[in-house]
Amino acid sequence: RQQAAKKLEERIEEELHQLDMPHARFQVQVCHAGEEGHVKFTRRGTDEVRFLLTTNPGEDYKPLARVASGGELSRIMLAIKTVLTTAEDASTLIFDEIDTGVSGRAANKVGEKLFALSMEKQVLCVTHLPQIAAMADTHFSVQKGERDGRTYTHVERLDRAGRGEELARLIGGSSVTELLRQSAEQLLAEGEKYRNVLREAL
Image (cartoon, rainbow, N blue to C red; front, side, top):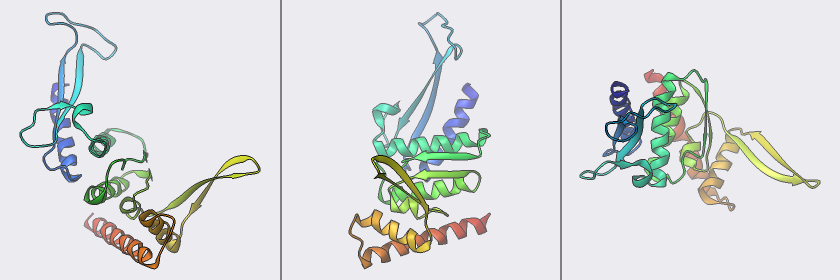
């Protein structure tokens, strides 16, 4: 476990740096369970494992729950999941609002990381961020409504025009203007360009 912990630390730190957390340092602390001089056996063995993190230079390592903000925690979970997927047989990964608390440049980084993952696994991502949605190859609009006193869910695969319209709605809310449509189209174009470059590089 000590040897595996060092490898895990290095790989997760690398992922965090790519997710716009350049100063993040991740530590896996493995120590014996029980009081000093006594070994405590649990279902997980005789070790206790803790994940510690520092996000700013000069700060001490602290447990994730005490140091990470909502946006940082989302990126940490994505980094951990990215590293662990190499050891998993699952062919599909589902992320439900992995972008919570994330915006701006960090959102772009999360979108790029999700696309990179999708080149090895099928990735399904529920998101309300246009920067992340624009990085997808395929978009589905999921809407909940009511009919005859029953709640139903409508799922629709969007064409290019529908993708632009939905991104414009995510950017500006219920009132979609021509300027918002232009911004959405720019996001889609930038997403396509990034995906094509990455595919050609591989």
